[in-house]
Amino acid sequence: MFFYIDESGHTGNNLFDSTQPYLYYGVLGSHLNLDILAEPEVCKMRKILGVEDRLHAAELGETNLVKILPDLYKLSKERKISFDFYRLDKSDYPVLCFFDQVFDQGINPAMTWSGYWTPLRYVLLAHLDKLFTTELKKIAWSARLESKDSTCDEMVQNICNQLLNKLHKIEDKRLNVLFHDTLSWAIHNTRELHFNAKSKRDKKFISPNLIGFQSAYLGIVNRSKKAKRKVFKVTIDQQDQFNTVQDYLAEIYRRVEGQSYPLGFNIGEMDFRKTKMPFPSFSSSKNSYGLELVDLYLWLFKRYQEGKLNHPSLIQFVNSQLNKAYFDEVSIKATTFRFENWMNSLGPMTQEDYLRGQQLIELEEKRRTSFLV
Image (cartoon, rainbow, N blue to C red; front, side, top):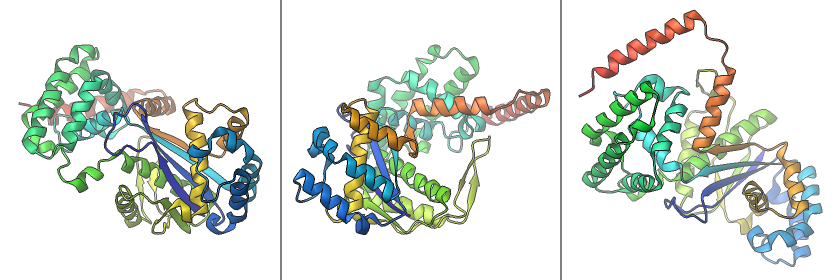
């Protein structure tokens, strides 16, 4: 299979641009090499629209895109095209990062293993998010980007103290205790959290773009396995700011090819046993018909998702593609939804389950309370 990746809504490490609240990734897949075989169709669409260089949806707008809909339908069917769509809620990202730095049980011993390494983490995330104001999120993200350790640590301590003052909003006594102990440990051991990304390179690697690309990459793995087809080429839109990070992540996944990592708790596994991914190729959409097409799909799906797609024919086209599309989201809302699905997948609790749970709580309490100040 051949895949073409583009993104939209990127603002680098500026997470608070109200005009672009989401980061989007679109992945166009085909059994055929669109950079070669889609040339006649793309050139025809350019001619219809009077475009000499390349098709760019944001410049064309809905009125023009309607004119090439018959060609898009035909191309989608004849070239066996699939489109997968991923997005990240930038306003939630500072909370997700804060949780992963401060509540990581491998770093913070006041946290429980079950509260961080199982789907119960989604419950803690939802409650943590309720304690964060927009201003606190901005401070947390500034601390993440702060180059000076002492300044970062002061900011993190300030955040933890503000969160401690809000714990009365968490009515669940068990959660209240966990939050109190975890945040208190963080205040007294702040430097051990290594909260900040100090160098320019490190700042690139905490960008939301890396998380979005991870979703797109894993989606390609699942798509190729489902189709039982080899991935021949992955072409990524050329963006100097992000391509280094994308290539780095792809290299990490290449190293684990042939292995499987069970996630446990009835939520599946990360299975790379039958995965063979090529090195990604970075190209300008001016030199790739596949990238030219993914730009059209991504723009349509993005506007559809945001409720901004108005023309009925374009809405109908997106709906016709949804039945074969993958969609995933990185957000607090999405993690809450995953937890609800996991809870619904569980059977009734037995007496044996209850006793095992009590034993786990006792073990966790004995371990973690030994580290409390």
